[in-house]
Length: 464
Image 1: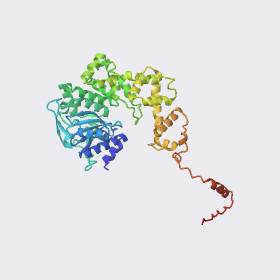
Image 2: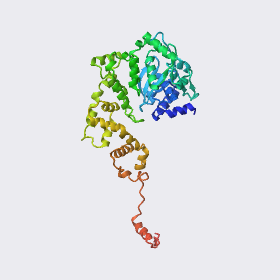
Image 3: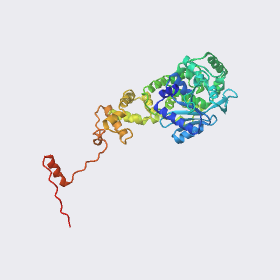
Image 4: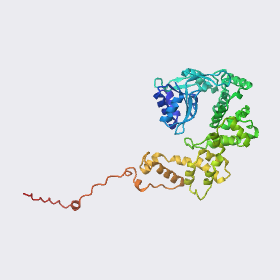
């Protein structure tokens, strides 16, 4: 195993490793060269947590995506038939993008690019910034080979963002927003010539050429940032938030609520999946101070679909049932009952109520759930269940028993295994009972036990 493959393994979560293996298998079935590229490589080489996995394949990325949908039950979230790329979400929650190795030539600023298949070096050279232009080969013949034609690793070490081309921000103006987002997320400086290109592009007003759906996708990326409020603040200072809505400025720019949202998201323990819709939460608080008419204009300006809009416009209404349950002192008395109810809820509803509910009891119970109870639940491991109940993961009762043990610990109770599991690992499985001696042999056995000599058996006379 190469050093880079070892580094990759150490940066991936178990769920990401599972997704990586599925993509490798799908690419191998199609006999396509496969590379890990983009943000995944940037984060790995820069020492940051890997958020999403970006892959480039020789041939159509859509074909690999369809194979993953069929073989790995991955959901295709969005496709770009022009670029032959697809975004997928695996059942374990991992998001990946699979795209065709390609070149893109822009006839004019902001225009639809002319796309052609290419090799990996050409593909890396056409990307936005050098730090996003590093690749790791996953093809069996060259697995573990690092490719860095633009010296992106050097820029990562210098903590500097440098554009690949003197015209990159003109060709695809959404890169203007991306540049500032990366600056805030990574804490990097912008290279001098790239800064000059940014200023010239802004003076030319090319940001006005960003397409509505590209604006929406960038807003999705901002929503996923751990410091989304800082990104919004930076864009506002640069006069760019008005691209999303002219109303998003001054007192209507809800920076305080977004900062509270960022802080609340950090309360969720690492490794815990609350099925959190970060975009719904972000858009709710971003547009909270807009009028209904301004919200409608915002939706139209970003070409947001009705289904996408409903996710955040109905968030408050969807959270009411959870609020009624959590504030009930009769329905939820024990800590374990509160924990079980919140564990079944959607993550965005939990955080919404924590930030928005007027009920003090609701906020306190959610704070305890995030700050204490989730950590207590994590203390009960699979080994603990096996040691206490004598059953292994995969046993029909394993999940239920583990939940019972978590509930007991939350309530401060001692957990007692059910009778059929109480004897521990050796006696968890039913054993064959020893054969009972026949009635005539019982007295003989009892006599031998008392020391009486065994009588010789009478011989039956043979019949003539």
